[in-house]
Length: 126
Image (cartoon, rainbow, N blue to C red; front, side, top):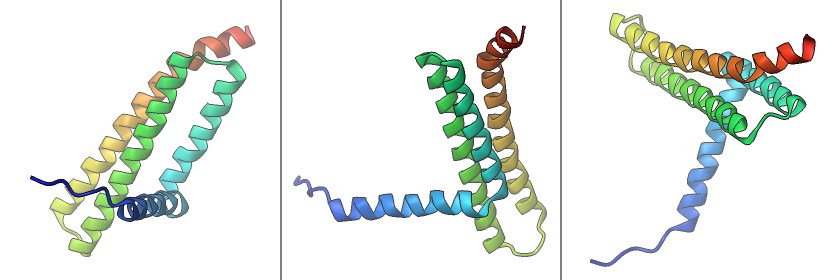
């Protein structure tokens, strides 16, 4: 069995398309912009409090998870709207489930952020 060589041009196109998707997410989706602002605030707090490498790992992982969930949710919503432009109870359930997934990850990120930053904030202000 022969292996085909890696198609660099195809790989570069894939990265370009993915980048276009990321730009579109933050340009047109209100909730994604809210998550972006929250991420910037958390990153600035991380620098201010000089959080540890392990804490950075947790924070960056959760930022990525929230953005990923928001991107999947947006993709599901756009696909659902294409498939069924009119109201349909199953489409509503799909959209609600996807939005619920974003909420779960966002709540997890808030909990992790609280575990990292609340002790630092208390020490700073007390």
